[in-house]
Length: 307
Image (cartoon, rainbow, N blue to C red):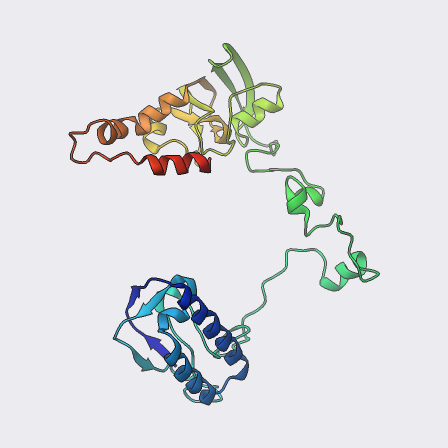
């Protein structure tokens, strides 16, 4: 049985919390009993205790007046006509009641299980690591390799970290390009040969060079450079806008060379001013601007504490 209606926000009180917990415990018991008669009894009890919004827990939703009862079409092999299908929340995609089986709606168990990426079956794993009924707390095996090894399963199985990602070693079958970098932070000019399948910064560091960096994932602008000559491919450079990329700015930590390059470092302030400075000036520095944003010191203090 489905209930449909319009949703509206409702304050969530301590009393509602208690009713929600009791209601949810009833729903759990119901899922094990699976009879229409018990569903009707439960609906009656819940109706006496709380609004439908209270039954939805912390999301604190309540139904409007457009509530109606509908039934889903019966499957050809359904054992009971019009079996209760719970509360349908539409786009939220939740369902309550006894209709949800272990593999999907109405207990449909035709969906194949997800394939395992592990090289061992459960029985094989237990035979190897759980011989006496216990497991070593510090066991080093394939499943937990992602939490203890840089590179995870690939490294555990004999591979190398970051292969074909730009961070790891080159495949060795691509062209190399000469990258010349003027590093204003260190007052030096460096040069390095970078394969097309490696990020400029990572190859430079592997060759003993020190370049400015912070996040190492294309999100900040600590390694920003201006491309004076050549072309760089940088799809993961989220820290700079497409407009700035078109103007020749790039991030070395996630940039692939497509040609020989001549680069020079630029300050983070320069990038910030180009991307956000004009908006800050228009909306935060001019009190006469009708679109000016009022400063919120409380929000700023919270943001500083978060950092």
